[in-house]
Length: 91
Image 1 (tube, rainbow, N blue to C red):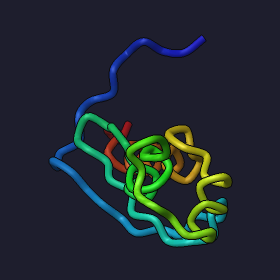
Image 2 (cartoon, rainbow, N blue to C red):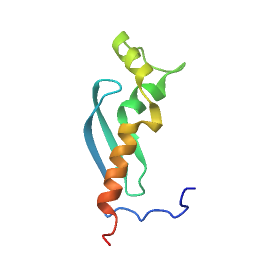
Image 3 (cartoon, rainbow, N blue to C red):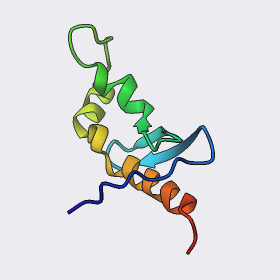
């Protein structure tokens, strides 16, 4: 059973970090807001845009899109969780 308590907001507005994503074998930029909303800019630029209005993409990008875990990516959640642990009040 998960806790329904909302974590305290961070002391900063937004942070971004470039990390290696083993799933797509490329660097991605992750952003986390003070409300702990984490996003991968690679996902937003490529995978989230697949559809009728998507720009043309080369085969390398298409292969990475298939490997991308999307919004539930472990790279994104691990980074967000690490930041949350760093900001958590020390007991």
